[in-house]
Structure formats: structure tokens, C-alpha cells
Image (cartoon, rainbow, N blue to C red):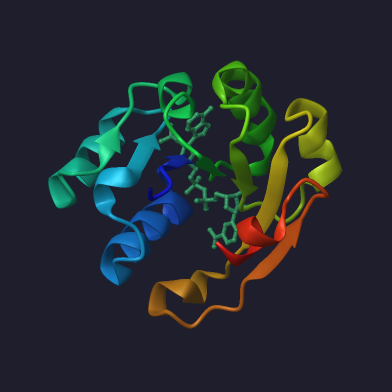
Length: 146
Ligand SMILES: NC(=O)c1ccc[n+]([C@@H]2O[C@H](COP(=O)([O-])OP(=O)(O)OC[C@H]3O[C@@H](n4cnc5c(N)ncnc54)[C@H](OP(=O)(O)O)[C@@H]3O)[C@@H](O)[C@H]2O)c1
């Protein structure tokens, strides 16, 4: 069964993730979930991709997904994770797009969770990005391949 993927933060990076997943058909859009602090912005996303699931808040999204991309600014990261963590599923793989926050800092909130950092550059818009990737010790080979 295909994994359900959630994205918290529908800004520059969140938008790019949705459009690239959809264009590449790497993921069935009905398995994508979105939540953004300003809910109204995600209505736009649903106009473009009606199958994508829009969630009213981060907790509703976290209950649904197997993989969770956190696409908020560094200063917003702690608050976004703190309000979400109790609803993140046990087995969820958490992926941060931020370069400056360390895995070990994320682990202080996301205890015993699989955590990866996946940092694209803006050139990913043109499908020409070098992406930096690193993982914590809970991430297994199968997750890395995914
Ligand atoms: N932009 C790049 O070229 C780039 C490249 C590599 C990595 N990154 C990293 O990617 C991450 C996102 O950057 P960005 O440029 O996409 O930022 P952005 O355009 O400012 O988007 C951030 C989004 O997060 C939402 N948000 C903030 N707090 C939230 C919360 N608690 N719950 C739900 N949504 C929340 C904001 O909602 P509102 O609509 O309410 O403001 C906004 O839509 C950053 O950590 C950045 O370091 C960015």
C-alpha cells in the first residue's frame, strides 16, 4: 500500500513539493495531505489538485500520515512540532527541509522517531537541484531508498 504523505507549511517549499509529486506522478495525489497555519492559502492548492486532502490543522494531518514533511521557517519549527507531536503516529518518518536545525535538536521533541533532513535548492523548481540528505539512527535502509 502506498504511503500517505503529509506536508506542514504551504509556502515556497511546500508548494514545490506538492507540484513536483503531482507532476512526476511519484505519489498518487489522493495520498497527499496538506496543512498550513493560514488555512485559506491551501484552498488554492485544492483548486489545482482536488484530490489532495486539505487538513484544518497540523494535528488532523499528523493522525493520517506515514511520512511528514515539515516545511516551516526555522523559527517556526519548534512551535509547529510541539503542537503536532502528540498526534504524530508512532511509526511516522519525519522529514525537515531546514538546513540549520540539527537532527539531534529535532530528536528532543520527536523522541525515538525516524528523522531525516532533506534540503533542496530553489533550482529544484526547474528539476535541476542538488539535494542534501541526512538521517538519524532510527532511519532504516528501506526509508532511505524511499
Ligand atoms: N525557500 C528555499 O529556497 C528553501 C530551500 C531549502 C530549504 N528551505 C527550508 O524550507 C523551509 C520552508 O521554507 P519556505 O521558504 O517554504 O518558507 P515560507 O515560504 O515562509 O513557508 C512557510 C509556511 O509555513 C507555514 N507555517 C508556519 N508555521 C506553521 C505552523 N505552526 N503550522 C502550519 N504551518 C505553518 C506558513 O504559514 P502562513 O501562510 O500562515 O505564513 C507558511 O506558509 C525552511 O525551514 C527553509 O529553511 C527553503
